[in-house]
Length: 259
Image 1 (cartoon, rainbow, N blue to C red):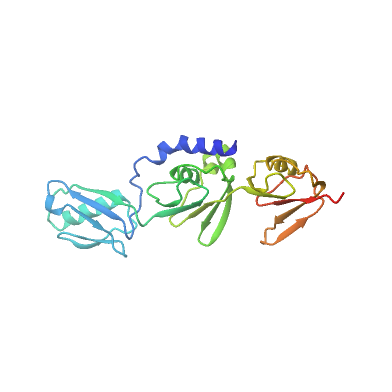
Image 2 (spheres, rainbow, N blue to C red):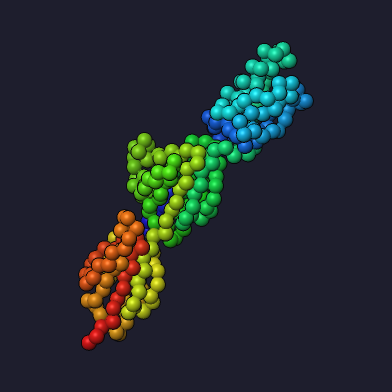
């Protein structure tokens, strides 16, 4: 149910995400731009910003556009052409044809993982839409890695926020998003041992049911869980009740009855 909600959310916001980038995009190294000077075809070029964010423009030579918005870069070029006396009233337009300097990465359980241009103000929820939603195995959690620090977010919680300042987690260049698989493992004396999606609030009994139920040799009371701890270690919990709620990556093991 949750994954359908998340996918629907992605579809709702996708029209806004794929709109044309705003003029607030800041140019940087590697971006490819098409510069057009009205009524001066000889000055219209398509070029790439070098490692220092500079372009080699006719008549002017090297000029830095690093960190400028598209509109600010247009004004900068027009100002130089005017002040140098080349054109009295230059009209300059810039179109970004390849967004290279500002990108984010989204990995894990999304339909289209990869690197995407950060060509306009983009939120974490927008990023899920750009990756065309989550897979059926996706969990509710998204990990955001920025400057070697990791922050954990609940997608359902963000989506339910009515306050935009709390709902919109804005991405920055270089951010890496990871959507983990939400799964558990049910092993031992069940009909279909294997890994299964962890549904919200799932208990041991529900997991056993999903795995086809007990075998004829199963002990209904000798159930144990191996659970990962925050430090990466594993803890074994024995004699678990069937009403015990499960966590991501839990390994539920049903032992054989000796009687």
